[in-house]
Amino acid sequence: IISDDNSKLDGELVHKFLTSSYWAEGRTLDEVKNSIENSISFGVYKNDRQIGFARVVSDLTTIAYLMDVFIVEEYKGKGISKLLIKRIFENNRFKRVKKWMLATKDAHSLYAEFGFKKIKNIDRLMEKVISRK
Image 1: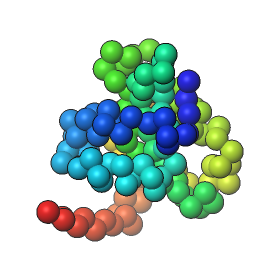
Image 2: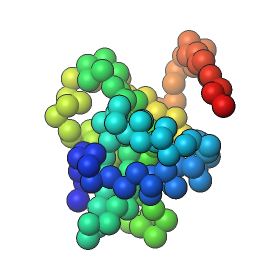
Image 3: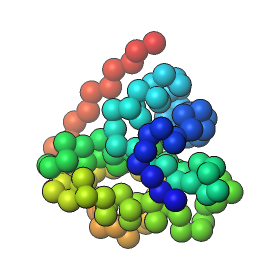
Image 4: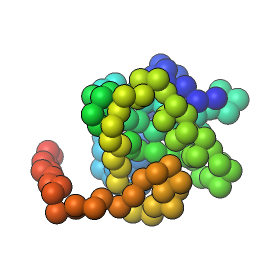
């Protein structure tokens, strides 16, 4: 089952997975919970146990940013991440979105199956990283 009901999410499981990932190391439990509350989040469940997660930050019209996608280790390689991404793109809230973005170090081929490509004009992108310790 894939659900966008935040009340079903296991915040501690999400926090544990994310803080062991290369992209979210060091996030506090409070930061993870706050990011879930302020995004459109999706949980993947098998027998009422959460086995996956993803969230989208979006204005629901011009841009959506897919992030924090994961499937727990014992369920990887079974096509569940593809199903999760497919369901996210089928969600009616995103039907007007014109541009999707994401960042990945090692899942380019997965996202290419959904039409993602390397950014053509990467020199136009900028970032501002704020360290709050």
